[in-house]
Image (cartoon, rainbow, N blue to C red):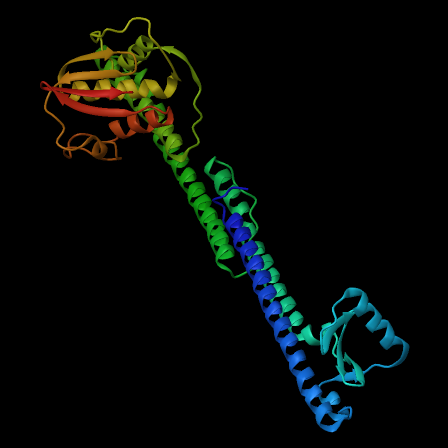
Length: 389
């Protein structure tokens, strides 16, 4: 069992409590036994004194002390046992025979054997009942606490399962303890999140459908235009809008966690070429890249390259791409960012209102995180350097 587990600590605490209870019970029982032993000898002294004074057996005193005289063969049997055991005292003796205690008083000619009418169970009954009651209470408390903590294990499994994209088959708990309340609150949250997620997906699908319809109709109408320059311009505009809608749909999948990466070996130069095609760039970008390969999802990684190249052209000049063993750097001359990179990797973050939607670096960072890659920025020698690690 995990030593950091609450159940493990509860088991340790219960074990310590039981051991402490047994040790305390043993100490109390030993104290009671010694006290009874002293009281027994005290009774013997009082009886001996009474016999010396009256020269008679004090039956009333024996009755008060719950002692019974023993005669005949059984008396001889007990005394014979005492002789064999060599436990005889000079004037009185305390004997234990067959689970009973006896007091042997020899005063002159009087040889008196007295049996204690109180049994062991009778003397220790209250103590035994208290001990058993306390141990029972400990066991019941332990079982109750353990039963209350058991749902934590299932809650942990459900949280992990939900974190991995699954939906647990939850069942609400009827108890009102803290663990049950936390479990039920988690299940309530799952229901709310799933309802919001379903509403969001429905809204996004409808939005893309409504936006995609006029773009598709526009591309069809472009074919009816006779003037070549206008036709090329309109075709470029509608193609760009169509690609933008696809990118937004892809980012919606990234944001909702529904996008599955299809990683395969891709040449970095192929990603650059694809990004240039999306941006309609005719001039090649200077780089030191040859045949290097990345194990990535082509459809999403091309967006990373496109956005970083577009960002460099929009805010700088003389762009170049450099690669070393662990990084790919997108370098351009220009002014440094006014704020930290973390600001620009948030959705809709931008320098001013005329710079588009502010999604470029947010999309880049989201895709790189999905690929377990890091993203950094630095400014050196008048150049902005965005680094994919």
